[in-house]
Length: 355
Image 1 (cartoon, rainbow, N blue to C red):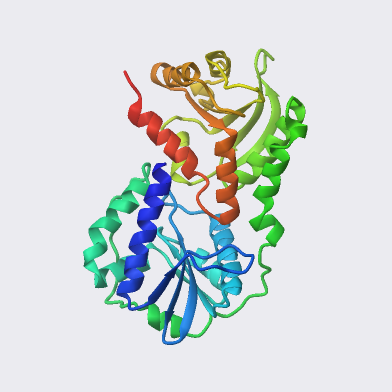
Image 2 (cartoon, rainbow, N blue to C red):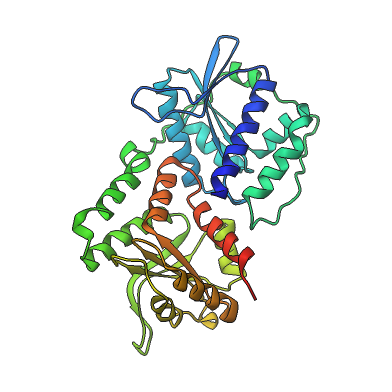
């Protein structure tokens, strides 16, 4: 999948930069019954657990960043490392970095601006780095990599030797909520109890979506009907995110509201389900996007029908299987970019859309 290959490329170039900074680098060190970090680095008898993140949007949610920091903090403890470094290939606000520093005083944050300063020292990686960032953000308009360095220099070794940040009275996110909540939801959703029980499947699916898109969608409402009661859809929510994929849906598809349809079928859904959902979508009501979730995805005719709705009427119908939902839950638990699943699907659909 594109998202995975881009992330691996980003991780690889970060490893090269760390080595160029004269750090000893160990890949995927083993912690004790805890999530491992991407790297364990050391210099001058100081070790640090390193986690690498790359999000498919110019904007990065604080929720995801804090979850990433929490997972890294657990790995740091498991690896018995005195420091940790969170490396994010996105520009972060000063307030976001401060929020992490206050909660995790032993954690150093390197965002895109700091990575660009490091690249100025190691220009052999610059072109590849820029290409990876562009590939990771298919719907982002920022193609330039400008930094106002003000003659600033940067050294990872120097940062590792610096004093810890001042701690805060803020509580860290609880382990249950931040690290395994998605796993628990998946087990409940995929249990035998939900099979054949549409109401239970719908209830659990709603709970799952509210967790996955907690920072992206708001004003959730179940089983809404149109004024004439001619149409009824399972779930609707309003876009409230600045993530690139949601901005694309809101701005380019003129859809401020997202309809969700749940299909608890024992086989792949067919084109008839696409045509039924398409009737609910109205561009003038800012409701031109639907996400259909089924256990096993859609057959080829259904996929063709969804593309036809986009090509002929400008209505966007995204088809997800439970495998996609599981991936998003896993990403959400780890503080990764859960929206990258949607971003990849939409990028593929738009690039391959025929006349």
